[in-house]
Image (tube, rainbow, N blue to C red; front, side, top):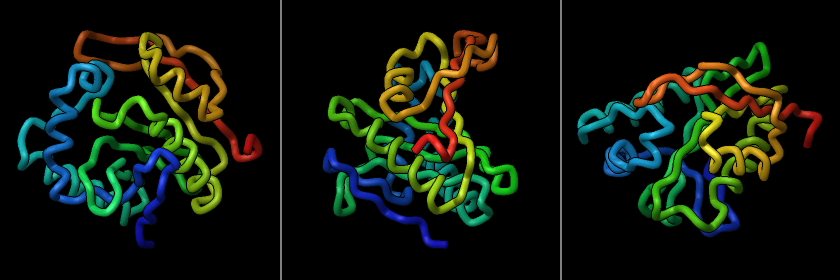
Length: 178
């Protein structure tokens, strides 16, 4: 299946990652606010290009579905959103995302989360979607709430970051929530 492209109300779009987007992955790995909450080990253009190739391979093997959040008409990538840990038989997946400063402040992450959630339910036929984030990551908690993901609880010492283990909030949506 070809990866769909989605336009967002904020004027950005969700599209497949391109090798030319390698700079965005390297920039994200260097951005303190992203690096604090994500384990991005991409430190060079070569590593970034390999990561983008793996994104396409994982799409083809139905293991994950990852989009660039970008300016329309072939513009620069300013973020990433997608579904990892896709279990088509079990009907579940977990969302992952980050956004560079150039894409912040216009509600794009909430829009993107809502759009890929609709796609996961409507096109993949998934039943349960998870959104997990460090308890201290208040921005992700706001995205989860605004995108309709209910807080289900706290998982103790569940996620390793650069500064050690963090408790994680577990949010979820099920297909009947829409």
